[in-house]
Amino acid sequence: MPLKTPKFWSGLNWQSILLFPLSFIWRLGHYINQKNAHPQKSDIPVICVGNLTVGGSGKTPVVITLCRFLSGIDKSPSVLTRGFGGREKGPIFVNSNLHQSVDVGDEPLMMSNSNTVCVSRNRPAGAAFISSEKELDCVVMDDGLQNPTLEKDLNIAVFDGKFGIGNGLLLPAGPMREPLDDGLKNVDMVIFNGEDETGLTQKFHHIFQYLQVNFAQMMKLSNI
Image (cartoon, rainbow, N blue to C red):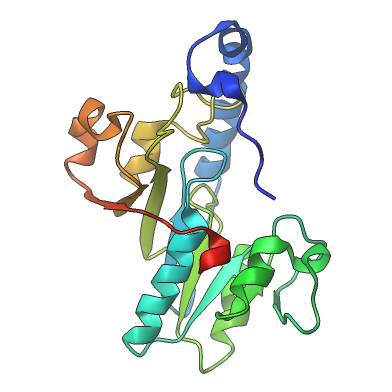
């Protein structure tokens, strides 16, 4: 299940100010993690769909839609996910006849009804596992923009149009997994779930002007 977004992440208040010093620790950890990374190259293309904030943004429906598109142009994609909420470490392919949500997580189980889904805590191992299946020719990585272990060929960031980036602060003072400027430097495309109600693209026009920005109304996972 998605983590519930704290209300104080929506703006600056005493709670976010109190936690602000801890954001420096998060930023340092993120910097060290990225700096010391040695990304592994997959044998097949990797498209990563993720977000720069914690919480739901409509990322998973984008993954499903992308898989449909790729299948429509004679590609054979597999979703790669860490299986949040499940006990399986993988790499394994999800089988709805064999697995339950306690094994692989709710969303991977739902996605497996119409997609090939691989659960793997180790992303490079998951990509290698997928590429070993000769009929599969590309990876759609569900989340992982901040995961430096696997080299990506295309990065797509998804934003919730209503929430945007909240107060714009790093965890735990705010919802940001990494600074907006840093995150968007590594992104090729941006998708807003709904209209940009927070004015994010206007406020940070100097960044977004170099990216392909798309607006879409994502359906709930249960409707896909």
